Image (cartoon, rainbow, N blue to C red; front, side):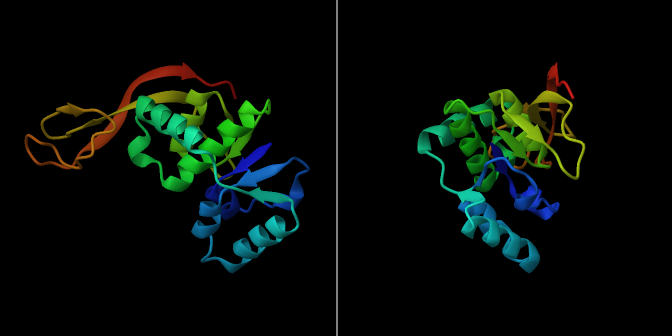
Length: 172
C-alpha cells in the first residue's frame, strides 16, 4: 500500500500511474487546494476509488506522537504529517507493507523509527535515523527536542536544532 503525503502531490505524483492501493488523509487535500491541477488530480483519484481518503485512529496518532518525541521531530511535524504516519501504522498492522511517498525529512525520520518504508520523489531522502536536540547557538545550552520554547531561557537567543547522535544508516 502507498501512503501519500502532500509533498507527493506537489512533486507531481499521479495516483493513476501505479497499480498499488493508495491512501491519504483529508488534511492532505486541505493543503493542496490552492493549485487547481493538483486538486483536480486528487479529487479525480478519490472519486474514482483509486485513492482512499480517511482519518486515522486516535491510537495510531498517539503512537506517532510518542515516536516523534523520541527522535525529536514532534516540534516539526504538522497535524497532516502525523495523520499520514498514523495511516501507515494502520496499514502495517493489517499485515501490509506500506510505503510513504514524501519528501518531508521529519516524516521520513519518524517513519524509519517506526519501521515503515518511505520513497522520496523530488529530494534524496534521509540516509540515517537522527535523534534531534535543540540548542542555543550563543551560550550552547541544550534543550530537549520537544521543548516548546523558541528562545533560550538563559540568554534569549532563538533556538536551533541539530542531530544528537546518528542511530543507524539506512539501506538505499
